[in-house]
Length: 141
Image (cartoon, rainbow, N blue to C red):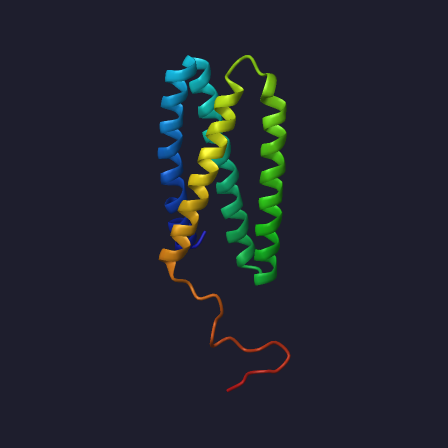
């Protein structure tokens, strides 16, 4: 991973973990140990899914901008589908509180998204390389 990707990952992961800890604490107070376990599982699922998404996009960015966009869209779609499937699968779970899992997943997803947006704004990366040659037209210099 590039240094910018690591900074982006830290900028999103740290607030997500903090929000996850708050949700775990609230779930423990409201639903006991099963609530805390459900919230912890939700927090871990979100952190793992979104970290894998950043890693996939980082790897694809080294191939081409089109691959990067494809990886971003596909990883987002897969994350949403798998989280929806997990929510449906766990709705009747008895080992932990499924509502705590769901609320943790929602809160952590929002925290990750906000952290990632904030991280992108702080990176000040160029969207277009002004010195890059235009494909099919040769070197403009």
